[in-house]
Amino acid sequence: MPPSPPRRCDHRTASGGSALPRAAALFGFVAIATVSIWGDAEAAPRPAGLDAEVRATWTSVPLREWARRVSETTGVPVIVDRRLDPDIAVTLASDGDTLRVLLERVATSATATVEPLISTTRLVPRDLAGRVQAAEAARNRVLRELPTDVRRIAEQRAPWNWPTAARPRDLVAAAADDAGLTVTGLDRIPHDHLPATTLPPLKLAERLDLVLADYDLRVAWSPTGGSIVPIDEGLEPSDRTAASSASKLPTPPRRDRKATPTNKADAQPDRERKADDETVYSLRVESPLDQAVSAVAKAMGLRSTLDKSSLAARGISPREIVRVDARDLSRDRLLDALVAPLGLAWTIDDETLRVFAPPATSATAPR
Image 1: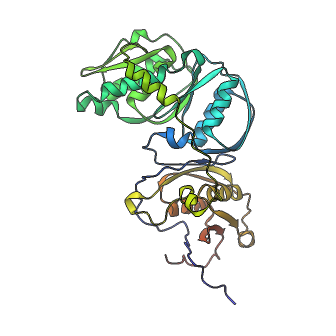
Image 2: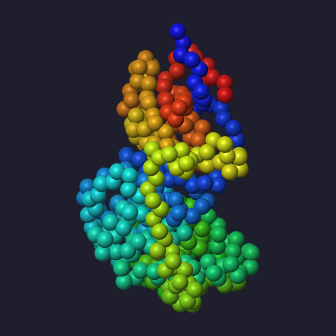
Image 3: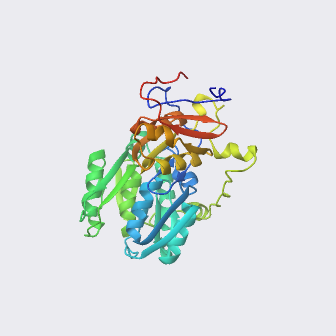
């Protein structure tokens, strides 16, 4: 006798779906292996990204390499100041601690401090705490007062990467030239060679100052372009006050996935939200199927089950590696992206995500 129809069932395979909504809410989570889910890429990562829950273990990983790995899995670029020892060994285990907490632990072992910025987070020597945040506040204050065409240049987003031994002066000059920006004072940048780096899309103003901060420099913007000046030149008391406030942001309480319904609404997308106020997600995963399904479900506040018998009938192992890199998807399309590599399907019923292998001849159930 076939089972009775579920109370609510979203049954999807990799095809189909509606137009993508914009995000008004943010949500962050990091799973074991290299699974990561994060919120709207256009929003500042500080409120969501640093409060993402992390489940991972690192053993004797050099500081710079640890920063690279955690950046890749969380989507929050973590920058290690060049004056810190990049080879300090990081040994750390996390079973749901926030990225903010982990950064503080690593900073303590490296005699450093954490400086959260709008789009990146820096680990800097303790005696330099607050300087980059104050410089960022000054930059944003000045940009708000400049002509629209200059602000448009400063806000141009682009990814940035360079090979080992790249020179900071060349990087700044090339980025400015590509944007059509005139920058003076390039000779202030010391001759140096940088490790290979890959960064996600950042505003031009953020990219330039990201490199210059290592040398206690920044770009002072003007209606005619920019000039490279000492990092604390032109700062006002309000800039330092803003930096102090940013460094003291309270850590939100850890969400309980098994909380009452009132709290549970905060832990997963609200299905009743309007289309222009619906959460969207991004997913980067290279992990065994069973781990990926469990991690994604937990990130959404769901239980999970993997129908191993249906997988076995199709010759698919629960340990099969799935690789997905997708951005700005609705919940349904996120799950489509997860099951697509292996041609699987999913349903949600009674707060449980079920992933299974449909018979090879079956058709996709209608929405």
